Image 1 (cartoon, rainbow, N blue to C red):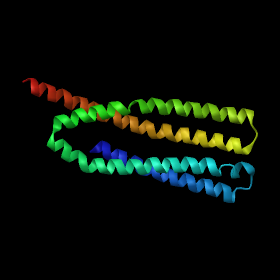
Image 2 (cartoon, rainbow, N blue to C red; image 1 turned 60 degrees about the vertical axis):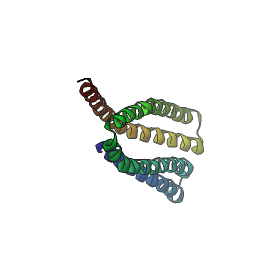
Image 3 (cartoon, helix red, strand yellow; image 1 turned 135 degrees about the horizontal axis):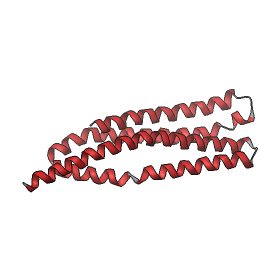
Image 4 (cartoon, rainbow, N blue to C red; image 1 turned 30 degrees about the vertical axis):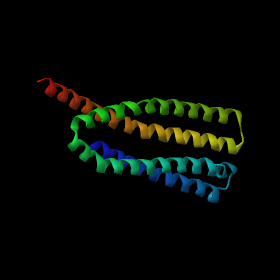
Length: 166
């Protein structure tokens, strides 16, 4: 349940981050006096919408889990532990993917700034770097919680195996 509570907190923060990012894009466009400020409109709106969608999806799925997990655990603990172990193993690759994507976004940002003086392309670069950095921050905490949760699942699975052998 602690893992789900952490996911819900993170989901709320991601949703809020997305909304604030959309607002920032609009404010840069409306209040900014330079082409560079105005060029941030779409990169920030797109980034914000993606993060708001991720946060909303996480809120929905984890609230659902919050209701289902205790019942599933009480009904069949062994099945719950096995299914959770597999579920956590199945999403671990995502952390590597996010690091690769962030790296590609940072490199793309540098290339856009080196080879283009166009505010539109540089705005896209800033949007990519912002998206990548936010993803790394989110996944840093998510991976930490997932690793702790997985360790507890493995411990519980080992205890079940010992109990069954006796």
